[in-house]
Length: 85
Image (tube, rainbow, N blue to C red; front, side):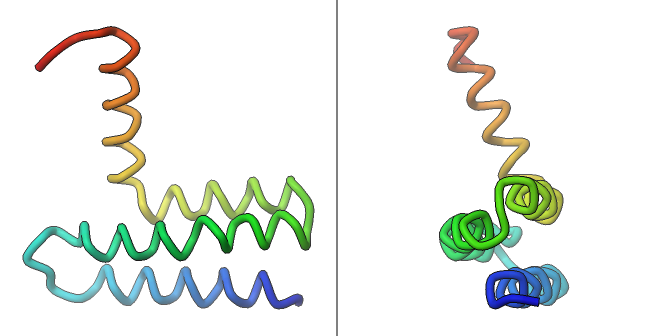
């Protein structure tokens, strides 16, 4: 196992531990920190292991951080349609 896979595994464990802790802001601060750390790590995994492993890691991270992905998809859909709420 190379360094990038070990770092992504530690990121996933940290994300799950943070999800178990109580939070007043519904874990959004934790999500921003995890996204900020995870994007460069995703690039590192893709660089060391290739695009298919990078895609698997991306899907795994999206399943962990599903609410930011859902809100991003809603925002993009709103921008494409041009609707205003």
